[in-house]
Length: 536
Image 1 (spheres, rainbow, N blue to C red):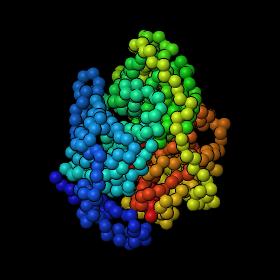
Image 2: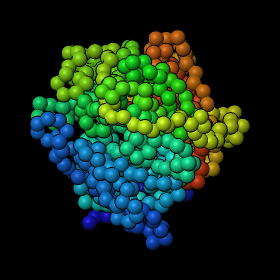
Image 3: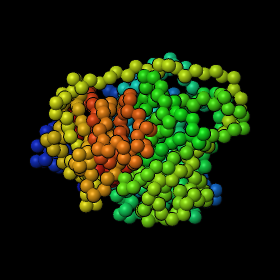
Image 4: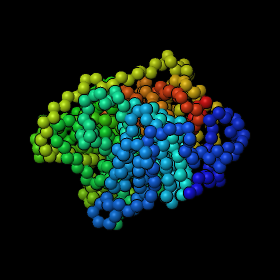
């Protein structure tokens, strides 16, 4: 098995401890061949759990008729509790379940026809274990991850992170849940086992032979991919069978670019118990949930007052998109891709193209059996330490990042992604708390010719949202989704709307090295809306 990385494709793989000036002067000084990053297990790392993940080309049954050609991750527990891995049906990557404090070693084997690497989205891990694109491995190679689970209990996930190919790789199947538990969570009387249900929402285009279709040209790149079918857990027309009791539903927006405005068809409000970084301090009630790509929401749903045989539908409600790019929830979005949003195979909701979002079904819940369980939603869920502005190393001078789309480029502070291109303002002192602002056309700054929402994801530790400032709070586009925002608790992805500035407090503790931040509209990311931060 090959372990050396193609040096021509990835010039350097280690930045920790080196200055930006030195790296700029000697861009090829350190490379994968000399460092052998991720090629061998460390003898001094004592893993509690060892896992093998293999990326393979498969044909799987998703729709009625011919099988679908996908890229699938297959998992196996080599050491430790076998429940650490659940291999999923359809194209989904295995669900990984670990406990805070456990040490895990993961062997990623690439048997795909393209270089790839996996990023552990939301996890606080060393830089070399984070899945930076510069560590991508070729067919036949293996990357060894070793890290301790430092995160609190929460719904995290993992996905491919190869520069300029992330969107296509994730679309092809390289993504799965990574669920962490801890003692605080387990002390709560929350639904467990079959009553704790992870649900990933994705959209796809499929041809008459049941093959995934990805593409759409220049307009797709600028707006992001929008598929004409919704799949939940890799299944079209998904139906969840429940008992008359409480459930914990873990919602993940795993779509490339689509934003969902989730609402129950009977108007039942949501009881939200968790966000990207785990449980909230206490439940929050929302009329609907605005869920951007990569965001998660955990909800408590009690079906105890519903009769057996009744149904409930989770829908994505209509909202205006205007010039807001991927806010176009319906199929087409003006992308020239044809067709209308189909809730499942064949059921067209609207033909042709549409710039406005449409109301469509995400999943159906069917109450199928009685239960005597009498679960009560806890009034207090967890302790969330509030970050303080006074503790920020730069409380009087925030790091300002302008988001813009100009001349077929997606930019951060006017820059696109390049390996070995760290600037002075992208160097962060380790073990500091940083105040950061993301400006998407607030006061007319940034934005460019196209005002689009951008879900911004920062690698490394979770952050907290300090405030949102918007140029026009009464604007129809903003007010149609703003009641679905939930900025409390810990986050790793935040939606920044057109005309808005979002301020966060972000810790950079424990680990030095390269940590990325980028737009999680994957088409924007692949266009270069991604930069590195050097923590040192």
